[in-house]
Image (cartoon, rainbow, N blue to C red; front, side, top):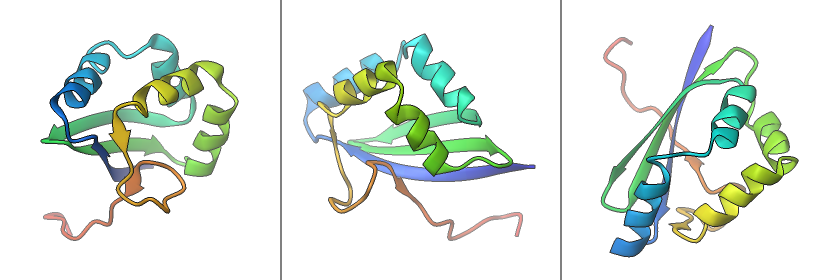
Length: 111
């Protein structure tokens, strides 16, 4: 069984940060892609409108954000990538444990 999650985050609202974030995501490091799939993420897409980011992830059964965070925390290359990305990002919710905020589904055509 596959599950889907949607998350949101903002880029700093300046053209340089937006352009840099987009540029880095044209060629995501292979170690980052591997860390994503190793955590049980089957597919990930990130969309942007203005400075708002929207991520959709399809995950395998048993996926957990806690396990993903633990794997990321012990991976120096992921930490390097995240430190780099935080030069361009800003939290939607300053109190959020992680930058990306899980979104609630409010409608599905299939339901």
